[in-house]
Length: 163
Image 1 (cartoon, rainbow, N blue to C red):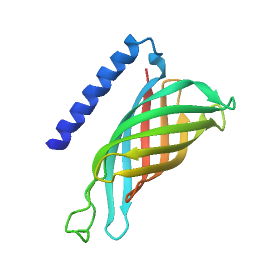
Image 2 (cartoon, rainbow, N blue to C red; image 1 turned 90 degrees about the vertical axis):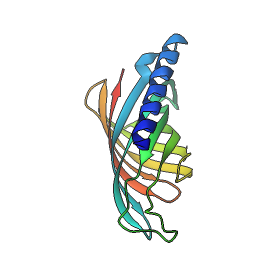
Image 3 (cartoon, helix red, strand yellow; image 1 turned 60 degrees about the vertical axis):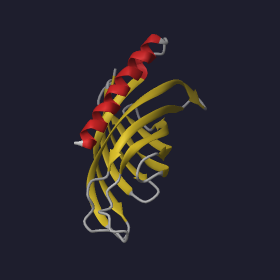
Image 4 (cartoon, helix red, strand yellow; image 1 turned 45 degrees about the horizontal axis):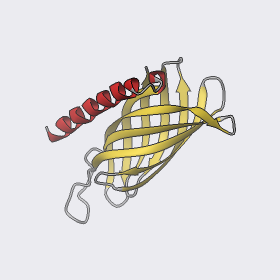
């Protein structure tokens, strides 16, 4: 129940942020929402299936005329791991994270992604990730990423939708 309530609060915050972005004159067509599933591993503890959801904003400038930059904020739940860790906990982790995402086009429908961020939750610390994004059209895409956190590593599959 607590996780569901936290998720609802985060989604409400994202909606308020979206309205705020619209009011400040930022391009709402650059705002996107996404979410998906993750196969997570925690060395010495085991594996778990979890989920995440996020909101992002694509900036309108490009580095070196081909690298796009976005910022994302999201929520991650690692799921329950197979075994109890050395401290007696089940090893699940939840929390809010923020990241910068750089992408470069490999083709007209495929981008390579690199992310650098920070997790403010149970697995607090830096986040590093890389992956690919396939764009179905101008409004939706599928991402596959490998994301390494301080303790938990995960293979993620996410769907995102642009406004």
